Amino acid sequence: PMALKLIENGFHVICEKPMTTSLEEAKTLQKAHKKAGTVFALTHTYTGYPMVRQMREMIKKGVLGKIHKVDAVYYQGWINEIIHDKKKRSTVWRLDPKKAGISSCMGDIGVHAFNMVEYTTGLKVKSLLTDFNYLYKDNKMDVDGTVLIRMGDHVKGVIRSSQVATGEENGLGISIYGEKGAFRWEQENPNFLYLLSDTNPTQIYKPGHAYNSKLSLGGTKLPPGHPEGIFDSMANIYLGVSKAIRGKKFDDGEFPTMTDGVRGMNFIEATVESNKDGNVWVDLEK
Image 1 (cartoon, one colour):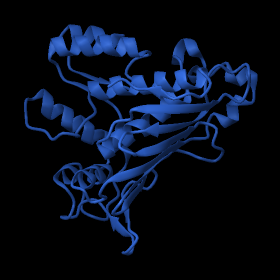
Image 2 (tube, helix red, strand yellow):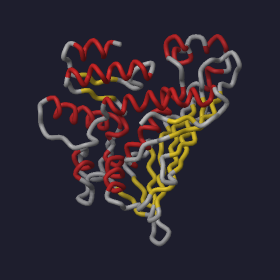
Image 3 (cartoon, helix red, strand yellow):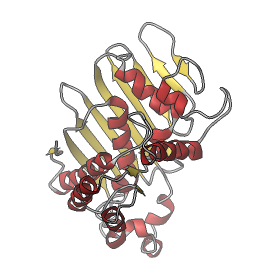
Image 4 (cartoon, helix red, strand yellow):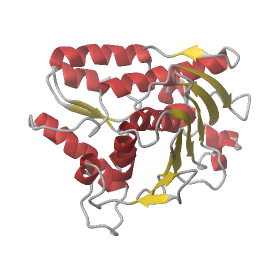
């Protein structure tokens, strides 16, 4: 991969996800990165949103108590207009294994939901079971999938991802349920973080206020009430990378790393393996 050549020649790298086309390639990249000692970042863009960072920090402080359920979803509908026409299907690179690798839906957007789960909760997915939908026998790439996940200590969840969810645009969202409360966040309304409770009214957290964490405020550029979107989220990741390159202090969680990239490829390959072997449980590497 191009990233490998850059790392081997001492360049800092910001890489699109998924990081490689296979877990083996990802490990090769990781080994080269450790040897080079350069800065490497992965563009899991949505981790740059202030309210995603706020959710992460509040969970870390125990606001939800012990987590027991996670529900992450990423629904798009753009392939729905293409998948039913065999001629159109052949023109889309994401549906071509030679160009897109082993997975379309899970490799393109499902891995974002997976990363969101691990980023916000601080927990690691230990095993998973997948059910893919290809819609047509002659279509070799998944366009829809549901993944059951186990994270240890009775923490379970589901990752739902689709590129044929009719009418959906960019519906990434996550709900995290704990013994004390729950968080809900949606990418299409990124400036609103909902804290749910059995005993109190639902609270809404918004960017720019003093009650937010240092990590959240560090990614907020405008006063409260001024919407910030996807470009701002990207900029927050680039800002974290620039700090690392310049040798300045930066907080954990400011940008996705090589480790996140390897985890993502492990997830993608495990989902494909699980579905191929008859929807069985597959362990992820530690």
